[in-house]
Image (cartoon, rainbow, N blue to C red):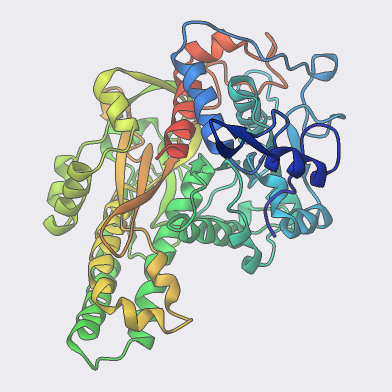
Length: 492
């Protein structure tokens, strides 16, 4: 019922087409069926493979082709008529219609906007609406249309309807200006901070059984990482409250949950290293107050907090490494778990960095805490291994079944540097999902940087030179990375 209606090609009714296709012909003394050239089309098949083929050709071919897209009077907008890049869902009524007819998103890119812009350009203070760039890049490279869901205008729908978001070609959760750790900065009345985090939680839980790739950018990256911390906390509570201590596997699962809780409450994060102290814009006149400590995985700023310095610039990614500071402050078990995940898997971005440099655009003042993500990877790892022997018991209880959808682990892929020192340590992550049979089945990517914004920091609607050409996209590291990630996940 969720698949698009099949439209028959050619003239005549569907019955006539079937008669043409099934008319027996004799060949060599045997009866065979020779299909007509006007055979039926199946638009619900091939979308993933067609998009993958077009993206592969765009990225690898030396021949540059231009798919003509012209903004009205040289301007770009989600509300232009007719729609140039796709559809815009910005009212509760349109959202309800969209969720009631999920097939409308089939083979399209779904862009979720948590906020109306990702920030303002440092020169002219124009708002940067990066969702336009994402839609334009996919349209230009593979003629893929988009649906932009303005979460900040529609509000969060009933969470039971979010599993319907499984038909798009890919889902991109965009950036925004608020701080995930500060709910007071989420000033639009229809979408609170907790609403946005809950949407991220449900997207992450759906990924293991959903073929639709998910990319989380900027504040989307912070929402996803905050959601992972919350999912770990909720898993601990669910296990300790609802799993009985009546067998060895279930007793072990409870012990693991208790161990995660104890470690999480004791973990301490220090922000504002001395090497950046005199460059930091502190709200307090006493610069010593810039050095602040965050203790416990229940702290509002455990997952992400204000960065030591703002990054609004083009910069280079470097591969993530475990620093001596982390080795000295974190339990070895947490460090080693990340080393094992990083050794077993490749997250594409780290593969790219092993071959060449990668220049990207940063547009943020907050960051995800590296200690929190190393803790999350460790917690998800030991939870998965302990849930495995209890999966039959958990599968019988509706209020615990979501535990089977948790990711298996997380790898920190890249960082950025400032004057030779790590600034944004968690610049990109890869979230891995493993089936209960032990196979890695899915992965999602999060990134603090904006692969869809070029070095001039403009969205296409305010770019002085106009929207970029296909040649410009092929020469831009961020654009190539975005298209490569979507193509690789479609084919993963």
